[in-house]
Image: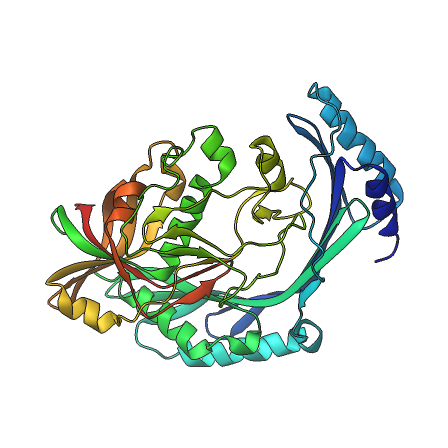
Length: 438
């Protein structure tokens, strides 16, 4: 990259600093369908910039710049140093365990090959699979995008680069029956647009939408529950945040004193891995530290926390490869880009058949209200209620309550419908004795 050598020279001369360069490109369209297709947004967009971080003994300074003009790099470095000094700290080489692995790229070429016209043709195909179906009145929203993401990490003059191509489709359907209107949808993310099964996407969005008709309540009870894979992805996001060492250190997690203890059913294994069907896998993290394959929950036992380089240094250890930067505007923090719950062997039909009563949760409302200290939650949900394997009614206006700890302990098994949901791979999961409130 032109002029990137400036950052290399600066970090080579300042061992307490690292730099991060971020480039994101997207080709996308947004469309809708009433009587005819309407293409409301067709664009090629870019977002790029870089940041500098200066480490200290107890904190770090941070500054960033939009765009890839590195002529002001010295100013950005100076601002990061000034930020550190303002915190009453001074620069210190914390010895980031920067790896010597080769650069990584997972570019499939679709970003260059596909045009906006190709995306429009795909939109027409999707519309054709939906229009004319019973109850469907319109398609208020369809978003198709192909993306290219490139991250460059620079430390002590050394450079690592990783990049990905991926594609996403989000489909939203409006349905009407006897004056009742319902809306719902589904999204899929794959490495290539051609890998997205549009038939499956349409079926999932359609099923979720029409199953909401005549939604109601059931009496409060403790019941077997399946959390749909999209919901499991959200739950795992919360769980991972509870296992980030910065939150552990501040006791902002119910697991702060549970290292090497049983925190879940022995049937649960949560893997952080560079292998498997995840979208953003690479052999090193966003700080250039080699990823460690880690079964963070191993047969119910919590084996480690997640560290970025700075929190690891403050705890007197090396990072374990989970430094994560969502963009150039924020400093690295511990997180995971490759979270896996392995696919199970149980089919949906078997789960329904084997349970006299069962609730299937399609959507959780208010995940941000989960108490990160105690793990307690009481969340609204949308879902479906089954008896003896047969659909009885859609559910809304109800709550699911408990703690994250209880939820983990009540895990029974995973279904066979695993899918990469962005940075997380998860199937739907079956839990026993979950409190449902009417």
